[in-house]
Length: 132
Image 1 (cartoon, rainbow, N blue to C red):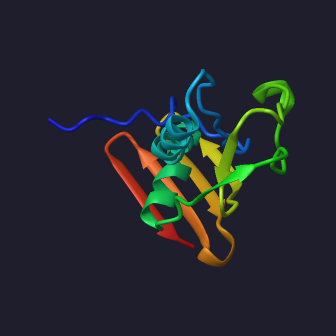
Image 2 (tube, rainbow, N blue to C red):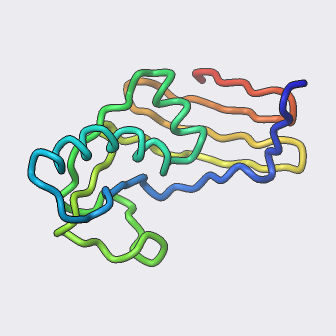
């Protein structure tokens, strides 16, 4: 039996996704390997599900090291920026344009620059994704 999606519980906001690996004592080689293995997956995990899905579908999962907070970083919700931590963000920005939530559906629109504007409509038993 297929799962049922509850559109009222899907989290979506306009805070940019960031990720820092766990900091512990490692050799330089171990540290580089750990970062390379974990960074992309961990960054995708921090994103809203619709953004992560869109990035995966468009093959836009490239990451970059961040030396300063990205635009719209919110220290009250995301914590103070620590320039000493290794922090990553997506190579290409994406902007959440709108979120409309009802008891039966979630409608999310993203602007992905030259990759277009994309709309997700999520209902209990149906998800549609289209370029608009």
